[in-house]
Length: 368
Image (cartoon, rainbow, N blue to C red):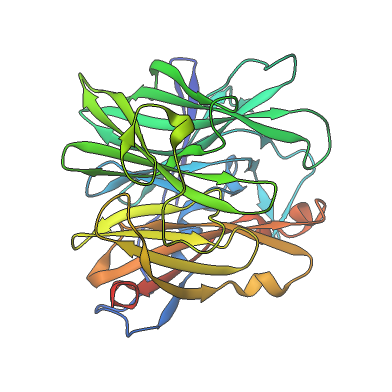
């Protein structure tokens, strides 16, 4: 295992760690219907041993670049060295977004700031006098441009839940060095309750961008927008109102057929001419899939594919299951979910807590 430090243009720095002999603990053929295989290799690959690597984070959002490379985006993250599964209180902690590049057997952790004082890669200004961070959503890569959506999260106090979603920003970054080409405030809390920016999929020349709309009654429906890529930029936005595509986001309606509150993070992707939604119940440890024939649904074929075992631990909470369809050996789907501790000191005494868990499920289980 090799460790190297790079400084790129004074804007970001990259920790690169190479690991050989990676093995996927998934069978060489499709899994049986209903069969789940736990994957322990991916988390070891994303969080390698060594100094100044990523040692913990949530989000686990992957954006495919090509057949061998993907970006992985993380929210609040720890860096530093881990000794005996413990991290020092002085370990760097980054609120916002940290990126990784997986390229074959190489994994790179990408942040802003300096090696001595790392920061979120993408940053924003204060909102109404309050500090704000950019939380990663989802995106895609086209013509050497990374199109990515970020949530502006405003911190109104020091408590665990003293924050609110303010807006969705649409960034275009250069694939070569992740420098910002431009950014656009797409939607704000005054315009919509739906947090558009997840589950991005292309279909018939249009890009469909999904979002959940959490409500005070603890419901959270799935909404969808779409846009055309014109001159390498998403334009001409429309929103589905339950029957038609309209230009006013205030007319957007929840999609039909989904009877659970959709998680803040989720996945929508295509497979064998079907659109697949994978989401965790927003308040429970169950993970479900739904399928549809069109991007806007209606959705049906609800499948309960997994119950998260950590959900039974009263000291932990689990959230934001995501699918990673680019890792698709033999019709098996890789799925992740996040785990966090209710007692913050536990994140220092047991580093393993604040890392995603992974498992494989057969695509036939979802589609049958």
